[in-house]
Image (cartoon, rainbow over all chains, first blue to last red; front, top):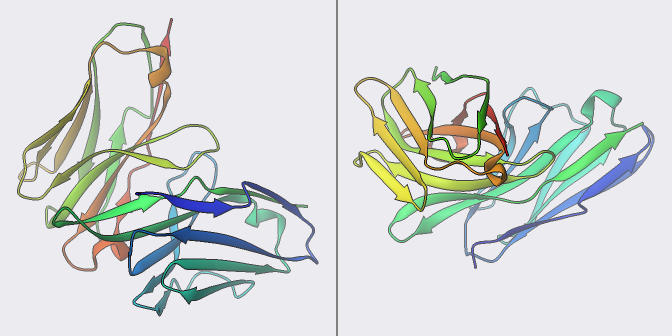
Length: 114
Length: 114
């Protein structure tokens, strides 16, 4: 199983809402990532959890809050977002597979902030 | 800082043509070079991954090559089909930092016309 799953597929929220994005993998990977991708742009790394240790991209605003309840799950909590935060949010995981480090991406959550 | 460039940004070809997508990178100290396919509003699908020690990888009608000395990778698609229409991204993963420091190219949007 080389699948990374993400829920929900689509999310529409107002600027005062609190919502969460969820990501799950069962490949035994110990590193998980959140990326943000705007239209016609490459993905930008937001957060990394590696062996449950968080690395933060310091340019990411505090209205985005990651959480890693266990090594298979990764959440992204959203609060007081702005319309410019509308984007595709991609989750990924990485680990050793057939002797090499490989990264796998989920299908993404398309977020619209009104 | 690694920079990854993809040329052309967009490409339109008739069905059946063989085509080449280009990816250039400035820092040759890479762990691997990966090619992804992305359909509109969807996640990244890994097509081919070339390790630093390899020169090429093949999967079906796809062939990717890597020349670290010149800082180039190419993705060759044989006998293109309308289903190949998508955006193709390359991504360079460095030895130092691994997937936490992966750099994506800006992509080539491919349209295969029936």
